[in-house]
Length: 425
Image (cartoon, rainbow, N blue to C red; front, side, top):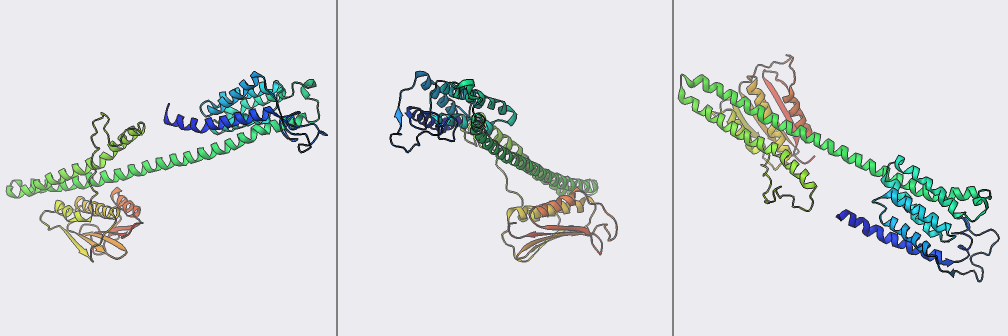
């Protein structure tokens, strides 16, 4: 038995026992409300008009024995209540039949009707409307069994229609509550599923941006350094070694970053497999060896800007980095966004022949400014098309609550400026 089944039975079995004991007590106690019917005057089969009121002298309950079949009917209803969430329709049908047999034995005790009412609620709360509404037709045999000892089954009596309406209400009102509960549950589940899908989509976009930035920047640097190495290889071979070292270092760093980024998919797959086996430790391997999952490298931040510039220009002639203000502690997401913006801007400068580039990091009390300028071929007034690189930088700035501007400078070249919040947003 699963843990969920045990929890369900631990809640439903006491309810079933309570209803069973209450029904037997009401059936044994033959008082003024149970001599001519199964409840108060307004209930189906209640005391006849003109009878003694319940508070009249000598109108106390009288206890009488029940036939064995009546005990069996009460036991069946109690058993159906105990398993109501496992087989709701079967439990409802069996309980309705047992209740009809109970009243066909000319037994009283309206408390037994609590069982079908609870089962109607459970059925409506767990099943779609079309799957449980036909089962409510079992209320008709119960109505007929309750009036089986009357001429023409009491159909021509003045209160027959009202009695049938009340019996249907005793089933349909709990069923309506079940429909409301099911609707709210379904709405909550849909909202949760939409949130999960939206989170997955946003995570895929984030990973796509990471891969684009890492691969695009690394390939641009490798292409530039390879061009330098080919240019000096025949004339000055000793100057080709720094370019080849830069290619080797850039490709190594790119592979490490890609491994850390793509490890998200492997970790996510292990989490999904582990969700089916909650009893196992979350860090255990599928083979049972207990090997920990892949370690995630810390995301790059502003402390790697100098390393980024050195990878593009080892000599330090084409890329300069300078800081303004006193450096303060910043959120990791803000630092990572600033690093990726600088990386993409320098990649564009290298790719489009932007000439010398300057990176300015400004630390201010309420915001961090990142400005990248180059002396390339861009001119003011000249039309240019924003590619995925600029769009990605703008999305990164917006994701942390900042803004980004990009365009040609007045004196030539290109300028990218990002203003990012210095605190969490």
